[in-house]
Length: 112
Length: 113
Image (cartoon, rainbow over all chains, first blue to last red; front, side, top):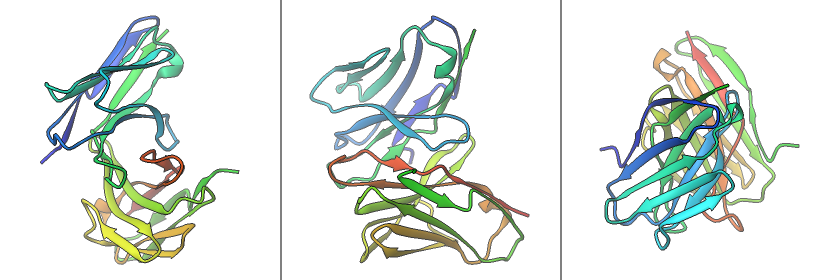
């Protein structure tokens, strides 16, 4: 049973465009929703995270939108740049001890 | 120096061989994890450890074993490697004061022929 479903699997965006990656979860006990960014040859690194007490969190060009009733959250990358080309993973966990459950990843390519 | 290191970075081995992947961290975290990454399948948890005396199986532990030699060291072993264990393996850590955030090593690319 896949607890965190991520889409699309791959995404091509023109420079300056908006990249949107979506995730849906099933476990209503999840209370921490991070996004990780992975460049080729590197390990994933935390990009931005949100908890369900807010509907949106913005850090620079990166925004998480969270819809608790729909059990969905999404990553928006504004003014996408070629340097944003990477694989993005959404994840979810419960409490301070819960393990992260990762989505299957989205490979983003930003064309110049 | 990197906070989470993995050795080796690349390894080619043959079916049936025993192999050990090592992870060390200087972050002082108590929790350590081993993940496997396959194209299109994301990151899947193999084993995790909340402290030296606490080892737990993850989603895909069959065919793997681990050892937590110290708070800073967590090793993953493949007792008898098989070709479908060819993958990218990541170690990660988490703990105070970073909470749920996991810090990943650079990965080990393992090929089993």
